[in-house]
Image 1 (cartoon, rainbow, N blue to C red):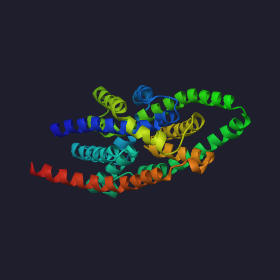
Image 2: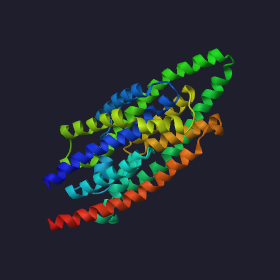
Image 3: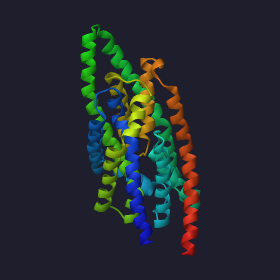
Length: 326
């Protein structure tokens, strides 16, 4: 069992690396897409604030993942969950499609729970709240993004007639994007740290400085070395962004994510931001939206939940059989 626990820690590091590389695009993609930051500077900024979020704001997500869905994990159930989520997020990340690592992890937990403790052994209230948060967060992101940009467009942009003044206005909003991106990266750090390490913290019996180091190391290295792939998708492929639209999408989504994380709900920052970006795009004009990319992203999301449910159940069953043979 000690070797299985060690493998679980290594998989936790691997998963933290991958989920951060996937989700950092939610924080810095709009800043890169609008030209406010270069890719390298954006990745460094995102890594720093994700580090702070992981250390100071991830506790509620850890409790939801580690204790809120099924009874405390044993080594086999914990290993099955982390292995399932790591495999799935790797498959999607290699294709450059933004998915939700939170969806993958929670679905893996439920899949393992179905075959290990059954429906009656799981906290159905928590599962219901999580599902409702998955549905509502991109919808709230959509309306928040639409409303935020509409207010800026009506209250500020339309009042500016001079091209040179409008250029200066966009320059001003590019600086505002530094703050919205930093706030978003802080939220992503808290969310991803809790999702990636929640199971391991439960296995360790509570707080562990070693696991904090492992989780933060995975997040930061994933952002710096692999974060550019999905950042490109969020920043440039979904809709054409200038600083006013980029700030609107980022600020609206960041507030939504912050509120859900504060209540311990492991939502998808990717889905929330994409909803916000779509809202901003529609407020500006539907011709700026690239629906083929949105369709691809939606298709991948639809696959994630059933795939991780099934993969989690199969993985746990196989491990249970193998543990009985050893």
